[in-house]
Image 1 (tube, helix red, strand yellow):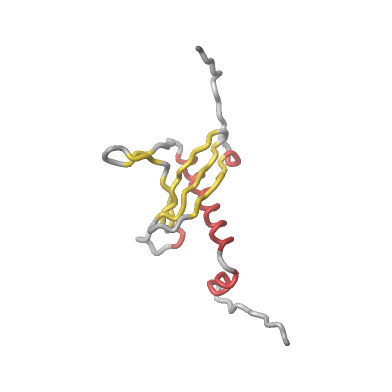
Image 2 (tube, helix red, strand yellow):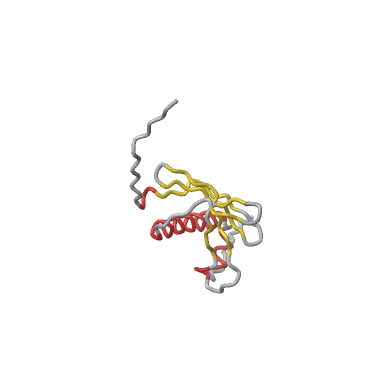
Length: 125
């Protein structure tokens, strides 16, 4: 049996990198696992980690590529030599993760974090 595939050219634009899902976790430093689409290719297993060694809020999350465990080590199963593509993947995953976290926060917690006093209205009897 022979299968002939035409030469495949994939053009990657900013719009073609999409986060399909993020599984929010609360393990020590691992905060989530993301799956993305890069054009017609789905890539699963990007890990979102919290860096406890930094005090800067913008630098406390980072992304690790999907990997598998060999007999002695973990090996990346995704690699790109294009730094711009990696930066875009990181940006999209972290942006979507932050959106999901903000959406799940209780409203009063957001108010307190913004140094506002939550207003609780009581119904008069």
